[in-house]
Amino acid sequence: MVVSCLFLLNLSVAQEFEDEVDPVLITLKGQILNLDDGFPVPYAHVVNMRTHGGTTTDTNGKFTMNMLNIDSLAISVIGFKKMYIHIDPNYNENDLYVIQAIPVRIAIKEVEVKGEKHEVDLGLPGAKPLDIDPELRGDGYNSRPSILAAFFNPLSFGQYHLSQKEKEKREVRKAIVSEEQWQKLSRYYTKDLVMSLTGLDETDADKFMIWFNSKGILSHTSSEYEIRTAILDYFELWIKESEKPTE
Image (cartoon, rainbow, N blue to C red; front, side, top):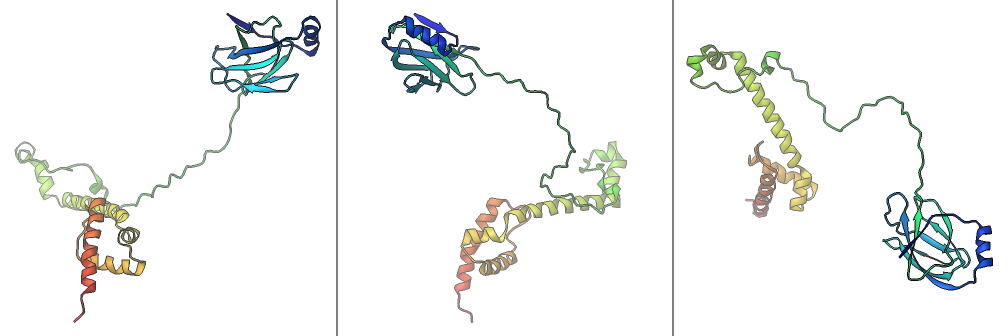
C-alpha cells in the first residue's frame, strides 16, 4: 500500500495534531517524487523540525527516519520548493509514505542583445598576393589533353603545347605547389625537432642541420615520418664522422 501527501502545514495545525494524538515512536519509510513527471528526487534533505536531526534521500528518492507520529518534516532540494509537512498520525510502518515535491518554475523575460559585430580572428595566415597575369590563373587546359584531342579538338591540343602563356601558367602553378610543399616541410623539419630527437644543444643542432642539409636528403614531398627517420639515421653517421681524427 502506498500513501501520498501534498500539503503544507503551519505550526497551528501541527499543534492541533499534538493535542489530539498520543505521541508514538515510528519508523517512517518515505519516498520523494517529482510532482510533474513522477520520477524520484534523489539527495533531498529531510529534517525533523523537533529534533533538528535529518537524513538524505537515496538515488531512488527513498529515506528512512525514526520519529514521533506528531513530528513535522522540512524537505529541501535544489530545483524544488521547500516543503513543511506533517505525517499522518495513523501512518502504518508497513506502508511507503510518498511525498510529491513541487519543481521551481522561473519565468524569464525575453532578452534582446544589441552590439557591434566584431570580426573574429581565427589565427589563420593571410593569403599572399600573387603577381601573376590573370590569364595564367585561368582554369583552361589544366590537364594535358589526350592524343585524340589532336584529331577531335586540334585547336585545344595546339594551344596546350604551343601557347607560351599556357607554358608559363603551368610553370607558375608548379612553383605554387612546390612552395606550399616546402612550407609544409618546414613545419616538420625544425631545430626543436632535431634537438628533441638527438639531444643536441642549439649550437650542435645548428652544426648538424648544416651538415644534414648539405646531403640533400629531404625533398619537399618528404613526410613527417620520413623526416624523423632520416634525422635519426644520419645523426649516427654525423657522430661517427665527427669522431674521426682530422688529418
